[in-house]
Length: 266
Image (tube, rainbow, N blue to C red; front, side, top):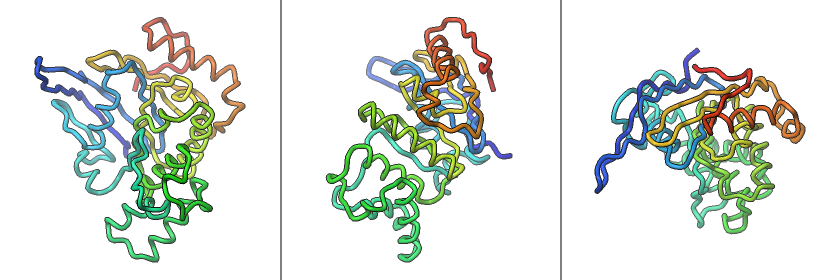
């Protein structure tokens, strides 16, 4: 099986007025096909920087990154991944359908095929009845669902998500987590997900990757242990295994001993 993401010995240094800042140092990470992996750590630890390097939005200062066995730049050109950020970034003059359709238009898909794909995606994210609405007529959660649909438009095998629910209220955020879990399962896409929320990381993920303060390094990788076929629902949020894993991730973030059977390094 080809690995979705392979990061080897990656470092990233930025030049600033006061000198060089080392954002990442000697990062190794493997994400398997179909796996959901969250990156968590203190502000400024390099989570988003690592995401941008995987997406080929920036270049590493050292080390290598491959996406499905290709250099990150090649994977970007081949549209092997979709990406979603904290802000939905929708075009206000386009409808829901028009925003979802945008990447398909940019890559020359025929009108009939576009219409069918947009309808499929609108149904996937539960927005069929809102396809003709504009972004200012949607709630924040709905806007993020449009952004997720747009990122899935070209059937990527990898979805990169940088705090996509960070600006949402807690109730909407939990609903979106459940929706994302369902969408990831239905599409089979691997997901790399940046978050500051420990419960969110545990709820969504097969593995939670814990990063240190700058320069960012991976200090722990914890398996949630819920299993590939686990149903991510309200019952899971109340399960003892969920609370145990949240505690384990919190302890790992604070550098205290982790008594958790799912801890591992890959």
